[in-house]
Image (cartoon, rainbow, N blue to C red; front, top):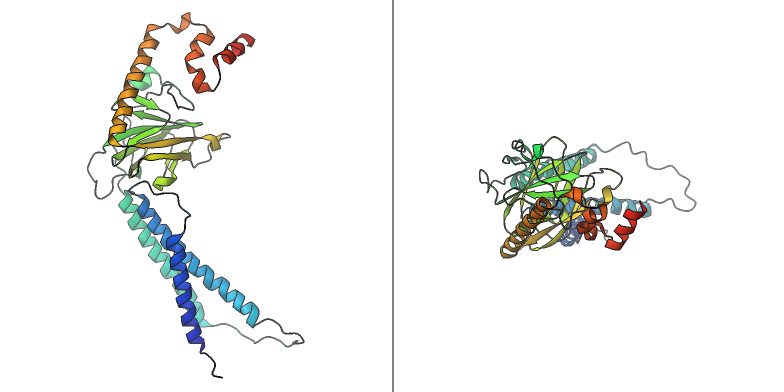
Length: 328
């Protein structure tokens, strides 16, 4: 019986490994649903890396398994193994292939980074955020009058900025984002709205001006495939376009303290009409809250009366608040 040449077996194995790697690399379900214009770029790069990783895994582990069976020690065989000292062509081969792969992935990643706007984080000056209590806000604070009237901060020069297609074009919507232990505060300079959730219209070119009040935080939206650090004293930028209406999680991806795991909120992508309705409703609501604050002197209120409007956001009932105040 004629023996099948090793070269033919190698060719067949190569075809099988390539087919399996490509199928798994392009049909996995490891990533959440895409919801931004930048997501397909990241997923395309990830799929290429994952395909290569699957191929390398099959080749290495498959070779190990074959060798375990073919070259196992037979019963009664006490002879020494073959005196193999090395194989120069093989060593050149398995050094050259990873080198080519790493160089190729490096060039590809730079292209993806450029298309996403990584080389052009050129934002615009933005005012300090007026952080006020708002429904849905986990933690809220109010800046002093001095901070509120301060000069515009320096434009971000770090982060993901305008893509080559939107270079030198202003963003459709600018939002100032401040990370604090342990919440995200979103301020809309054009409307004066402050919220604990990010609301944006679908299809709009959105620019987030990120900052941190205390320690390093990291603004990460898995569905957008975007993550950018918020640094104390150093403004950063994140610019993107959402493509699907919906509600997506926002996670702090930088260990920022004991309650880091609870530093979560949501980005809500509206249709243009729904976003305008949200914007109008919140402008009216915040103006009414401001009028109430101006009309009532907090010094004339008891502790329970002062905190009563916020009991819902605090997660307690008015009766519980009253008992806590009396007990204290």
